[in-house]
Length: 245
Length: 165
Image 1: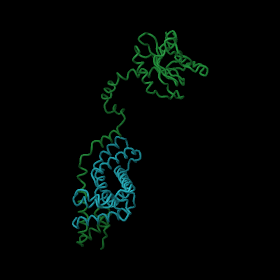
Image 2: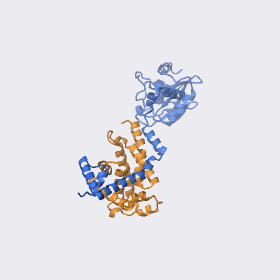
Image 3: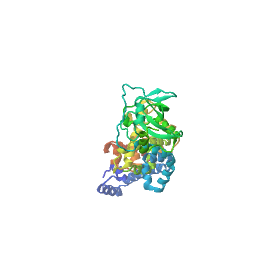
Image 4: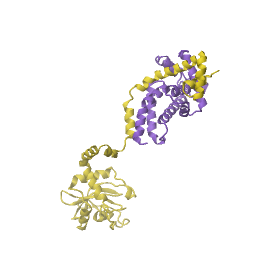
């Protein structure tokens, strides 16, 4: 029986079916040179395996494992499943710095009925800031927004009120964000005095605009100025109804 | 499969991946670079892996393709290489580079001298233990091509190592 190199190889590699395998094993018992070929193939296989085996035993670089772990890590929410205590502890630690932000978001987003907001005639009153006695004062649609708009009800308004608060001096201030300008204005007898003005958020999609770093900076400044918490929807409405005094 | 489970499986495969990479690249540092590139690509394209199929075959395919691309790119840049198998093969940096290596011992030297197409076939079947069908799929060649490369690769190894292997 003549056995090809392919057959010997397939025999050693375990690629033959039962019948073919038995046939070659049988032939090898009668043919010492075939048996030698099989042994040589087997020895080669063992030797190659032996040569490469230590590589798989080397410790794997930790940064490989770390990169896989970080790329496939479960979202933080599973912390709750793994350990409620750990999640609670983490939340408690974050709480002090998160608190004001949460209140702001609450004030701005509190769901409420949409009330009619007078935006003013934007074509004839383009200036939103004018020079007052002691500085810049809100004018036009900005003055309208500051006077009438509630942070809790301002869908699609061109100027958005980000929050309202009382400062040390006792007057009421509002943080606003518009296309032309954003800032902090505090109310006095002359109207809304600008405390801070930064470039506005230039987008027509008021509903979708994201607060930029300037806006974040304004919120931080407002945080520093305010006494107590930012107004909630009810406080804001009451203040407006009392004409911000 | 959840991402975490995918990550676990991949971590478990790392020692074997490293071994195959070393065999392809013929150098520890190049092998580890190849392994790292493979990890990155596997993580990036994890969505393309079909659950229920063998992750090791999928990862080996990625690794093998990265290496072949690198060798081709190197050859295109005109770096010194000796065409293997009269230019039929994709080619490797060639004998000069291998000769410059420190003595690796007979087995290492013998396998390093194989052309890539034989070396990858030998690595996948003899060292990594894949069945012919799986190895052919990883390489992306017909079964007959794989077996003929295996036969030639083995014969060359036998010659280098002596009949007693």
